[in-house]
Length: 354
Image (cartoon, rainbow, N blue to C red; front, side):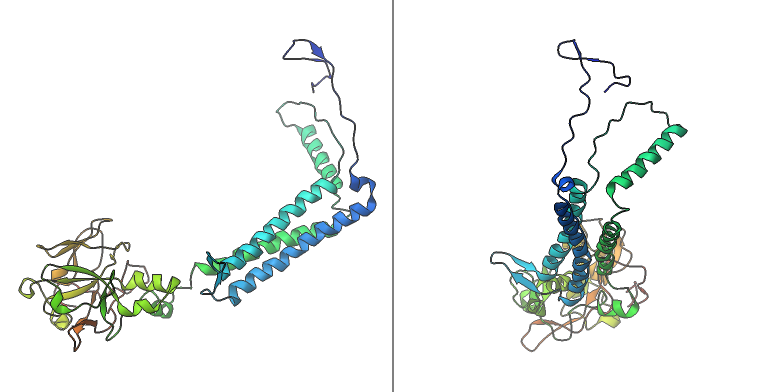
């Protein structure tokens, strides 16, 4: 509509057309039927009131439902916690959306209005008009007359933040020394755990490994784990087993019983950022990380000879059992994987001895 209500040109025919003005106002059923208005009002409050219940249910599921519980849906095996989170959190957000849309559709003011074009400059009169429009909008919303609606909306929005705050705890436990000792600084390797091929899961016999050969290996007890526990344990326990001529490598006195006839076992996880490594140079005894080219000398206790890695590749002490199979003597003596700022690195191997 033009500023001065003058006729405007029809762009298709170039002829003046009359100002159409406002259409006839048609009342809504909730404006005519007070019973319908009351039912809509109660329905909106009910939807908003369910949101805190769902938020509390979300928190209860987080603490009460085990993380390893699954629900079988036939072809789909879903984590029970995730299903609960999706149902409670998703339904809470849906109810807030439905309630606010329904509030606008059937309860807020339904009077048509015309806003004439004005200049972009913002002056005192414009700001005053805006404040007046804001107050009119507040009045039309009915929030002053129906204070329970405002409280219900505020409570629903406030409680909808509770699940998000609780999920901050899922970022992991506080990395205290005790927590680190039983989590990231510990693997499932232990005295007597057999070394097995990571593809066939067959135990490794010392006599079957040739000089210059590299075998990717895992602990035999990894097969006892499932789901998340399996993945976490595998990420820390993965090994590379190599055999070198004992006369061509350096064995520190403190590690004299860590190998079997030149067969040594090292962590497969790079100490830089945790990439898996198995690029083996048989002649130089070097192991190259494909991510950032950190290079470790497996013939000299896994020391770093090139690249950004700051500490040696952890070595697993091994021996043979009565049947000639390779087994671990213990867990790693230092944490595997990339460094972290809380870590005490004084026990890492350096040239000379461990």
